[in-house]
Length: 433
Ligand code: HEM
Image (tube, rainbow, N blue to C red):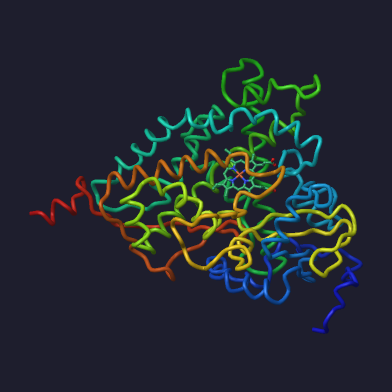
C-alpha cells in the first residue's frame, strides 16, 4: 500500500460499508490473537501509533500519552455516537450506549452520573464488604473440598453478578440469562466477513429486545412500589425537576448490569490466571496480604479487562502527526497504553508490587469507571478468601488451551480450571493418608 501523507486526511468511501467498524482490526483477526494482542500493540506503538484503518473506517490509537490525551478531552473527543459520521457505527450503538451516561457528553453525562454516584462512592462500597465476603465464601464452600474448580463458573462469574443484582434489586437467580445477555452485548465477530458481522448484530438486537422487556416490567413495578434499591432510585430520580426518560431508565439498568458484571468476572479470573502463571508473585502475596491492592492494580494493567474504548472527534484535530477529521471514530487501545514502555518500566513483566502504576484500565477523565471501587473491593476480597482456603493453587490447562471470551475488546477467558491443595481438600487428606 502506498504511504499516505499524514497531514492529508484519509479518503472516505462514498457509500458506507455495511459491516466496517463492526469488524475487528486485522491485527486481531483471530480469537487466538485476542489473548495475545501485545505483539501487535508493540508494533503499532513503534510504527504507526495513530493509525487510520481503511477497512473499519476509524482511527486506532496505541500510545499511553495519546490515549490519555484523547480520554482527558471530552470536548474534542465525544462519547456520543450520534456525533459519528460513520453511519454503521451510529446504528450499531443505538440503544446500547445512546441513552446511558457512557454515551453522553456534558452536561447530560454529569446529570445522569449524579443520579447513581452516591451508591458507588468508596465509603458506600466499603459497607458491602461483609456481604461480598459471604458470597465469596459460599462460592468456595461449594467447591473447595473437591480440590478443583473452574475459576470463572464457580467464583468469578457468580460473585459480581450476585452483588450487582442485589444492588439493583433484581433476582440473582436469573444470572444465567444475565450472562448470555451481557456477553451478547460485547460480542465481536470471529471472522472479518459481512455475514459474521451481521449475525453478531442480529443477536445483539435480539438481546436488547429481551433486556428492554425484562427491565420495562421491573421499572413499572418499582414506579408503583419503590424500595431502597438502585432501580427504585433511578425511576424516582429527577434531573432539573424532570424524571428520566424511559430510555434513560432502561439504559441505566442495562449499563449497570453489563458493566458491573463481565468486567469484574474477567478481572478476577485474570488475577488467578496471572498469579498461577507467576508462582513467585503468588507466594509474595500469600506472605504479605497488604500487597493485594498493588497486585490487583498490576493485573488491571497487565491483563486489562477492557482493551479498547471509542470516541468521536467533534472538530478537526491533530493527534501525533495525523489529522483527524470531525465525525471520525477514534478507538483508544487501553491494553496497548498499559504496556507502553514510555509509561512503564519492564511493561511486559508482571510486577506484583509495581509502584507507581498509572494504568488506564478504568479509563480516564469524566467517564472514569464509576464501579472501580466496587470492582477493586470484590477482586481483593475474593482473592483473599481463596488464599485463606487453599495452600497452593495451579492451572490445569496450558495457555494454548484457553478459549478467549467472544470479544476482541474484552480481555479474558471463557473458563479457567484450577486444582488446589488446602486443609479442607480431599487431595490433602488423600496425600496425608
Ligand atoms: C474490573 C472491572 C471493570 C473495568 C475494567 C471497568 C472499566 C471501565 C472503563 C474503561 C470505563 C470508561 C468508559 C469510557 O470512558 O468510555 C468504565 C465506565 C463505567 N463503568 Fe466500569 N469497569 C469495571 C467495573 C465496573 C463495575 C463493577 C461497575 C458498576 C457496578 C461499572 C460501571 C461503570 C459505569 C456506570 C461507567 C460509565 C461511567 C461514565 O460514563 O461516567 N464498572 N468502566
